[in-house]
Image (tube, rainbow, N blue to C red; front, side):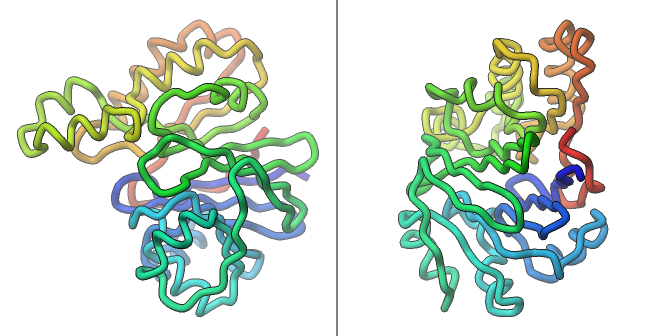
Length: 261
């Protein structure tokens, strides 16, 4: 049976991803109200009764705002790093957390979950890889910059939700953003641009990755058409040779569940 995945929302307004297999389901982040998340989960074709818990990647509000409420209401487990737990504690309320060290993982609902450190500017942030049998999906957003080992992780995936946060020209021209904020976004602890993410995938040495969903697009400094066009231009040969499928995660709405391969 295939592992099924969907973005429930993706961007600075809130992030959550849903992974389902026959034994159960898992959420990665819950950066919206519990009501909105459950609505989007059902629209995606998911089943709240299957959810075993939430993996939290880092402490920023667009990834944690619904976490505490959802655990208290549904009794779902929470997994996060110790640094994320401590940084988010005053915003999550009374919760029970299983802390997981970066570089390690756990198994739940027939899935093996691995956490990899990223240089994003949260406290002890991670990206998430979920594996079931020979199927492997990554939720690789809020990456900071292209760091050592990232390409190698991508090469082992079938499906990735890939950060494609900003268009450099839009960011540069944005008069509403002060220079320090622009520097933070494009700096070592910020986000990947469309071209940075596309060039990273272009350079992969293995051909396993066939499904790419562009994720965490900036509302102010990107557009879905710009991100998709940038990837399509840079990855044109790879898309044609491998039959790679390219999509864009909606900002507020859910995708329909899709097989990892």
